[in-house]
Picture 1 (spheres, helix red, strand yellow):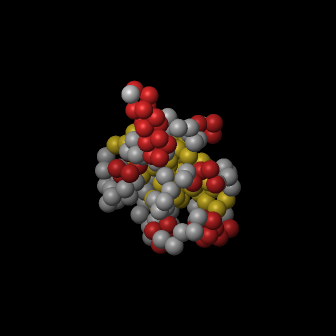
Picture 2 (tube, one colour):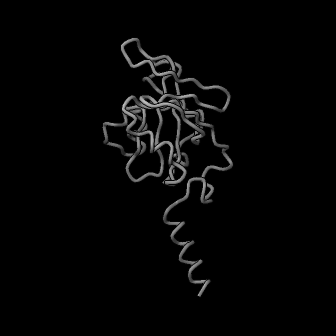
Length: 161
């Protein structure tokens, strides 16, 4: 399941609302990178202006590109880098600061894709917004559903016989 199919672009969502909507009980939703169980999506929560007591990651949105620092540990870097290869979409929730939206909410920007990264601890990523008309497309390079891929491969094998 792709989360983007159940989210409205530009809508404000709090983590609490997302937990209720997607029946999430995993506390790691409170982190910057979250992979919901049973979904082919990775959620990225970005707060541009961090509280003074938080790690001062350098994140900013420019047009359709997000210049974003991964986690200091780098533990989720490969998940971001290989998202397309692994049939996962990246969805971005963004806010300027924690108080921008009621309930510490985030604006859902939509699905993004990995473009590049440099460095480590943290890696500095460039992600680009995916056009709405390509969301959910099923081609080998963008958000491939593993079940559909296997059905197509089985059909192709049968045709060759």
